[in-house]
Length: 358
Image (cartoon, rainbow, N blue to C red; front, side, top):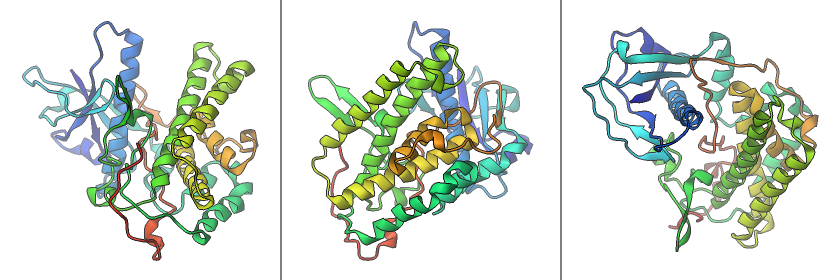
């Protein structure tokens, strides 16, 4: 059984490898080799996200994502832990030696500036990060700043406990019951004290809106790949229009479920969607530039501009050297930059106990 263990650069210089919980995939019987490889890539993605969090928390860790692909010793029996997503599970910590490490997946040294930008992405300057990595955003910076500033001039709804990690992977269609929301623990990479803080309910809504955007974008990318077209923009116009129409209809239906939003809530939702898309943009520019079109579409929709008017990032290129791709997806799971911060609003009312949107 192979487990992907998150690590940091400083772990590579010690006699024994780190003993940490990891990520593993559990494919179904009969799955094709290609499907299993996709699952393994997803497991690597989850471990790479955990590596970023370790790098944030560990002094002298080094600026790189590191994932150890570990083949469990024959004497070790692992029981998969909590499910992260279908077929992807947490793996409990276990002891092993360097000889059990089949591969070390790590960022190349020249990716350090980009990784550092991602490590700093939970500060208040997501727009700065995005503009630095995608210079084509520079002409729209004043418009972006104006949208953020506008949130200070509207009445905010009461804050409440929110889901905190709401996306398509967190909902399940239960036969005979309908749709149910899962995993109310919040963003797993944030401390519990932050996950339980009152926040804007529309932050969850914004997360789901961007998740629909990623679902559409991933479909477009995979369609391009299936037809051997390296650029998703080369997909047939009719197919691209159908995917865009699905995203628009899905978002509209989802928002209808929340009823009528006030003008203040509409503004807050727009800015929270923009905030998350800017985070995604900086992340994809640093880690997977071929996927930039997905967050670009989200940013362009809020700014009401043509995505093609936003230039490619400077220095776009592959940043990870590995036996397999260690590209981390901001996912739906990566936390936005919290530029709209309830703690900056002293006049905001205290939260009432309330459930997250479902």
